Amino acid sequence: MLSALRPGTPVYVLYKNEPRFAVAKVSQVSNQYPNIGYQQQPLMPGNNLAVNIAIEVDGKIENYERIPLNSSIAEFPEKGVLISETRDGIINEVNAIKSASVSALQQVDAHKNVIASCDKLLFDLNPQLRKEQEQAQEIATLKEQLSGMSEQIAALTGMLSKSLGKKKEE
Image 1: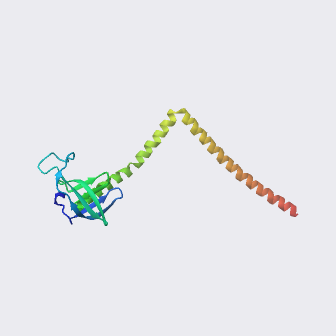
Image 2: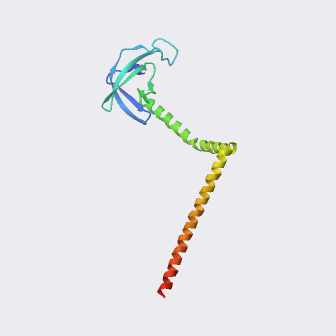
Image 3: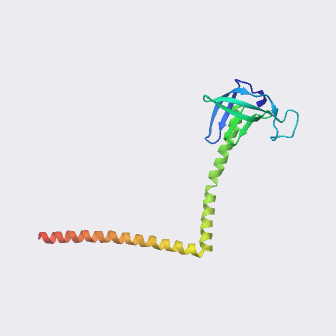
């Protein structure tokens, strides 16, 4: 439990936004105080106490407030940080982060299908959008045709130049 934190105690810190972890050392622990407004479990004696700590991590001091003493981990979503007294607490959280990302990647194709379906619905529901898309397709087709014609004209011009060059030599 985090209630055993003392100066010099190692703690594990997970920076969830990056993600990376560090082993830190507790440098200061405040006196215990009632953690009013924060309740993970029903009130029981000693169940709603907290401390503030300062930890030294990577040569810097970081301060964390309202660490509940009845837990083995403390999360600070506003900082994207999780502090654990054990390596296992960090491992469990890393597995949860990885699982969430794997799940999100598995849903990419489903979301692409939803986007394609919505585009088709918008196309069917909005005649102006359909007209604009048809015009864009016509313009793209005309550009391709012009490009092809330009290449053909350049080829013909090159052939004519060669023909005329040969006739002048004769």
